[in-house]
Amino acid sequence: MKKFQLLIAVLLLSTCTVVLAQEEETSNVTISGSVDAYFRTNLNAPNKGDAFQAPATSFGNLPGFSLGMANIIAAYEGEKVGFVADLVFGPRGEDAVFGSPMYAGGEAGSSQIVNQLYMYWNVNEVVTFTIGNFNTYLGYEVISPTGNFNYSTSYMFSYGPFSHTGIKADFQLSENWAFMASVMNPTDMTEFNFNGTYTLGGQLAYTTDGGGTYLNLLYGDQDGKLDMNTLSSFGNSSMGNTFQIDLTTGYDVTESLYLGLNTTYNTTSAGQVLNGNSIQDATGDGYGFYGVAGYVQAAASEKFSLGLRGEYFSVFNGGLDGVVGLNNMGDGNVFAATLSGNAKITDNFTLIPEVRLDAMTNDFFIDNDYQNSKNLTSFLIAGVFSF
Image 1 (cartoon, rainbow, N blue to C red):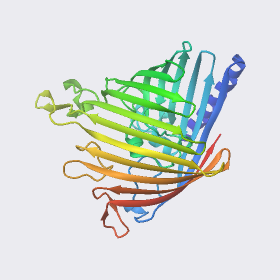
Image 2 (image 1 turned 180 degrees about the vertical axis):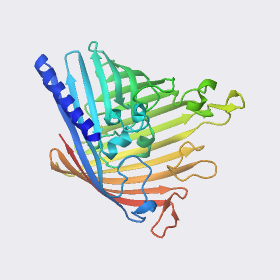
Image 3 (image 1 turned 120 degrees about the vertical axis):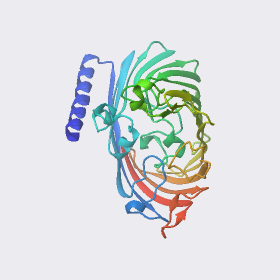
Image 4 (image 1 turned 30 degrees about the horizontal axis):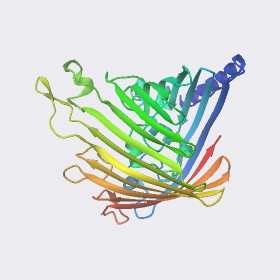
């Protein structure tokens, strides 16, 4: 079945490319993408079996020689309208679209290969409308390894949104300033809206030739409201509204030095609970996480660059489970330092050696003696090919 889906996807993309190119010679139709794989090992913890250790961040956390993903992107750019069909295959791709196989009853369906699928309309030089499934506007990092300097990803990226489905409007306010407003399904609910609630999003951006600064906002109920008629679907409790504010910035300081910063705060209110035969507002404080990460990248030559990511990430009131070591109050934090090299073998093939240290406040890992540990040191080397 999966081979058949892949064949159909490739045929459809090829057909669309040929037809669109024939119909409008002034259009721009492109096929692009990437392929990546890596080797990963722990230096102070087990590397096999159930005791295998890895940071609880997305991607780049499998043992030994491991696959990333194959990414195929078909894009059509007309004078006024266009579309992007972004398909992913492999472990990284499946992790990226974890919320998508709902339409097949929880089993892998065709939607599980859709990373992005959206259309846009350039109304004029100021306003653009987009509808469909698009990757998140929050955060510093992205799903594709071609868009990140480090191969492994940060905690803030891993537990912020990956993708949204909805409609957004982009406004180019001036040469440097832009604004985006959106109405979307709950986070990562990319196929359709099962919960019946919607999320609002916004972004204020300032960009120059040397970089940009982005203030991002998200607000909405992510798991729906309780209803006595649908308790079998929604359970006996629900979260309240989630609010996230995120600042991302990065600039070229010189031709060989780049500095970036990402900070985020995410909180969810207590929500609702079923009490006997009635639904009541839950009591208690909000829960969530916050963090800050700095990025420094320096080019030693045209072929080799070195980059360091330092991140502090904190969970409060049990906002995330199984991500960092927590105390009995549900609080915990981690500092993660990741040193990566980017070696350009050719213009479209990059080797990324990487050393990463994750240091928790509370026990979370297991060391080589199978004792509880707060620290994990790991090494990986990845190959990323883009076309």
